[in-house]
Amino acid sequence: MHRRLWIVLLLALAAPALCAQDVPDTPGLEGFNIPATGTYFWRYVPPDLPKDRPLPVVVFFHGSGGKPENYFNFILGPARTAGCVLVMPKSNNGLGWGDPLDELSVSESLRMTRAAIQVDERRISVSGHSAGAAYAYLIAYQTRQRYSAVFTMGSRYYEVTSVADPLYKAPIRMYYGTEDPNYFQGSYAALKQQWERLGVPWEDEIREGALHQEMYTSTTTRGFQFLVGKSYPGASAACEPGPNVLCLRDGRFRVEVTWRDFSARTGQGTVSSCSAEGSGIFWFFDPSNWEILVKVLDGCALNQRYWVFLAGITNVEYTLTVTDTLTGATATYHNPLGTTAVGVNDTQALAVCP
Image 1 (cartoon, rainbow, N blue to C red):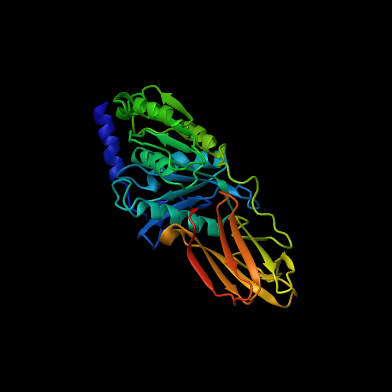
Image 2: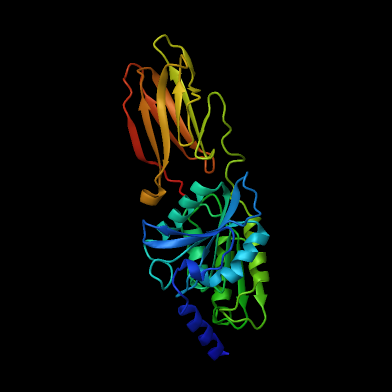
């Protein structure tokens, strides 16, 4: 039994590097470089998924010494069955996870995915095998990245003292084979105790006789279906645009303005028809007389923040509020009456990444 495990490990370590001609010609499967960290990720969008609505995303982490390509035979089919997009980053050091750049690689993979497809922000979950499984629950519970659920396969135990997100404890599903050392040497039992202590909802699947490196598409399918069925409890709906409501970045951010002029008249800023996806314009008194330009920029890859930039062309009083509809976090900017508005470049505005 031990010899069999060693052979499988050697095969995993000997897997080829990223090479387009070595990857099966699978519709919806694409590879991308991540310039910010020098590594890469694969994205699989099952061809039969609807393109007119936000889609659930599963971020999958490979095992130690492996690559995303090693897992295609075991995760692409289940992703299609479960109806989710797969994002599969390559770890930075090639050995495991936890390198300081790994979290940036994950953020960049998600940022590039958001730029290409509509993402259901309430259903971004994490999964992985072996070292990648441990990284999945560590990143889910030790950061405030709003992952909706966790699915692990053959994970080792690492201590989590508390759940960082005060709003949500992502449920976890664990899979083990009974011949996996991480099962019979105590990691499975310790993780169950840990989730009970932290109040994390958990469930499991145990396969008799299975080894650490043995994976089954039926197990992965059930795991991905578990992930797709969970949602982060954000706002009940994304931003709803209206005459006085500007919705930016796929409706995630709601922007509103109130104003008061020198005659003590008050009102709400009106959204200009010239507004675009990532930026917008408000007018107060006349559609041809613009008062404020506002942008919400994704700075997650640089400092784990969404940025707010403002350019005001007015000296009336206004208060502009940007609300993240997922978390309820807000950023507010005020210009006093009689003061010529100055530009705002707030790169610390909203710590709500990804």
